[in-house]
Amino acid sequence: AQKVTQAQTEISVVEKEDVTLDCVYETRDTTYYLFWYKQPPSGELVFLIRRNSFDEQNEISGRYSWNFQKSTSSFNFTITASQVVDSAVYFCALSDRSQGGSEKLVFGKGTKLTVNP
Amino acid sequence: ETGVTQSPTHLIKTRGQQVTLRCSSQSGHNTVSWYQQALGQGPQFIFQYYREEENGRGNFPPRFSGLQFPNYSSELNVNALELDDSALYLCASSMGTQETQYFGPGTRLLVL
Image (cartoon, rainbow over all chains, first blue to last red; front, side):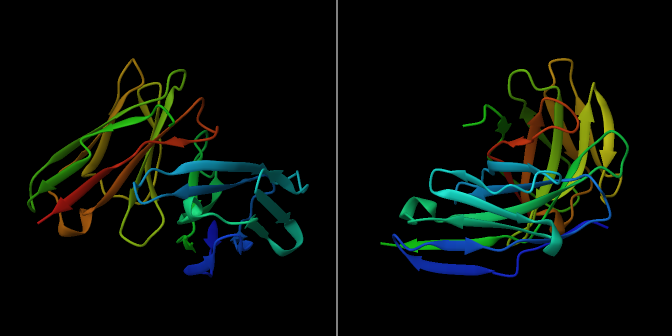
């Protein structure tokens, strides 16, 4: 079965520090997708990235970067020069296509990031 | 904002009652997925709707049911509410059954 582990329950940093959120996954699928979502206190899950298992290139988007390592089944997320607005719960998710034509997301338990001024 | 809307935002029910939650998908999206998020946990997949039919289901009992309408909006119905049904219910829409899911703001349900 698909599984996502986010070992860090809570992280607290001071503004402008860099912070890395860890994500480790388990899957038997040869093709799969990995995601990161941000959940601010309002509750809405905000999509950040979707990565195909065949694409192991790291990705950078502004202050955000993602490191995908298939050999260690990890998909880590780094925020550079963190800001107070980055405070949220961040979820890593893995696609599960075991039910025919549908895709469900399997989420980790999330990492709560607090950025202090 | 994603363009996915949900109503109501908050709801309080008592055990044994029935509840209906609503979701309007983003323009151009034909697939709706529903998730339940208990406090302090990640979202759990309930089911997905595509072309007005259920297209995949998670480990939820039959008292969780849904509908999708021709305009792709959707409803989640829960019968015989239990205390453990208290959670944030999230709806996500996508351009297809295996495309990126974009979430709405959720409905917070409290069962007393």
